[in-house]
Length: 462
Image (cartoon, rainbow, N blue to C red; front, side):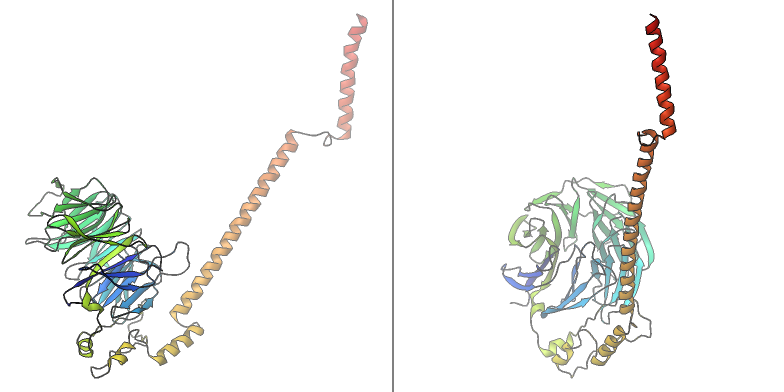
């Protein structure tokens, strides 16, 4: 493999058994398969071209939190498995790969320091599921979009801007800079893409499309905006910002429409060779953006692709020890809960440059043997946060079961009361012969006999 070549990394959310597939973009050859991964949209990213990080789908009704897996690209068979307190969907990292942000289905946001796994901050960002996260170009701000049709941008957790201009779920976020302004682009299922002044939060432009937009990407030269729709069409429009001052300006230029998929677009990205699109029809297309034609098609028959990312093929190489030392970058297990500032989680400091590579590899999870034994002992004695959380989750589950049983008994009792009232009503308004007392029977018989005698007397007189 040549050093300048690129590889395409894709994954689906259909099943954990499908995993991650990596293709050679130049030849279409299959390079690598990483098992055990099923990631939702915006849930896969690459850290410094050395690690893949993917959030895992959360089965509806399952007990416990979510999972985030991390693979070293030069040794991807054994992932580092982190288990946050709740299911994480979208992920984003800073350009230097030092910080990782995760968005939960509950609307909560989490921020970790990757090198030591510390959970630096967690806060409630949205009222509904958090769909996408994005760090600004200088990594100072975090932008989030959700199902509640709102966007946040701020130096978390201090909120800088808050917008609810979209009328449906937000599906994509992009940032770019022109000669005069820094902008944020957001897409939505309401069929619009909105352009915002990133500094002031002012709406600059709205691009309206005939279909819901599911994914967006910018041309590397940042002049063209590609919008993937739910019917498989890709709209290409010029992102002409200029010095517009009218917040109600609506772009009316007719976009170029690319058609090559039979299902809705699920992800878009760019490589040096062109635009890459994934669809619900289980195919991935690579486009020549000059002639607007498909130059290569990949089939992912195992399921619809939810995430695309492009990496250098050199990331898959087993590099020399000298290169490993010079490019040394470590990841650690992500904390489930924030840790006190003076706490020690048993992490090993990066080894000195004179150590061998085999010694470095053992520090991937940054836990020493002694600290691991102590951690297991504390877990058995229920003194760790994890043990407390397990106990809390068990108590919650037992309480939920007791609540369900109580409701069931109450419903049965209510049903029996209703039946009893019905029977009482029947007995009151529809008395049977058995229910009539003997004295009443005699009075009724006497009354009936007197009536008969009264009727017979007129007949006899006649």
